Length: 285
Ligand SMILES: NC(=O)c1ccc[n+]([C@@H]2O[C@H](COP(=O)([O-])OP(=O)(O)OC[C@H]3O[C@@H](n4cnc5c(N)ncnc54)[C@H](OP(=O)(O)O)[C@@H]3O)[C@@H](O)[C@H]2O)c1
Image (tube, rainbow, N blue to C red; front, side):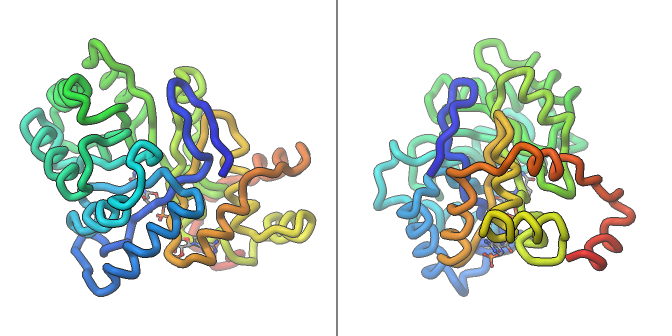
């Protein structure tokens, strides 16, 4: 696994997403043991950064991750979770983190995110709670997800002793938040790219440039799409995969480079407007 030093953190270029492991917003126990085994396999392969949330599988995903990581050296792992948008006040933030740690069977999180802004959030209280959790060493870094530049600046104003070290937003070839990346570059924050494979759509043939580059470099479309994301400074990506084959394939996306003109050609791909995305995907993917 390739590592990147970003700001004060050293992270693997690829982490493991866990959305839909253990269910979506409801717990699904039907594949629990296979999912625990899969995460263990992922760690053995080098996916030592695991991203989850209190809301995934209504908490079951954190339990699955907790079970999977319990036989590994915690110090070698980077575990992140997220606080749901209905819990964005002081009391709920502390309570949620306590429950997440219990489900994850760990004493601390390497990075704790606000999952997304909410209409009734009290950002000041939430940041105060995060700072308290930092002081208690229950979390090691503070992150925000799905936040705009203005909201990031507001959150930072409420922190007196800590800095926001990471932003988790969508970033893939067809849907990417360049403004958010710009903020991370300027403030030396880690940009964690979620949906780097656009939920798998970039991992199959049908998009001409990916097909051509896959052929040119003897790689797969998924490997080209992921390599392009993590080729950028300050970015790491967290593709989710639920088979050993996909994990191994994704691992093969790092540790090599394309020619500069190929990165530039990928950079130039126009992002379809949301309204025409469905038509675009129907045509090309
Ligand atoms: N902060 C947020 O609001 C937010 C939002 C969305 C996602 N996330 C995080 O980001 C992670 C990644 O996003 P995502 O899961 O939505 O989408 P993603 O990682 O872009 O795509 C996952 C899909 O790609 C497939 N896939 C993975 N590797 C593949 C390969 N080599 N070949 C073919 N297909 C492959 C997976 O299939 P299999 O499962 O069959 O392997 C799965 O269906 C999430 O799991 C979650 O942890 C955060």
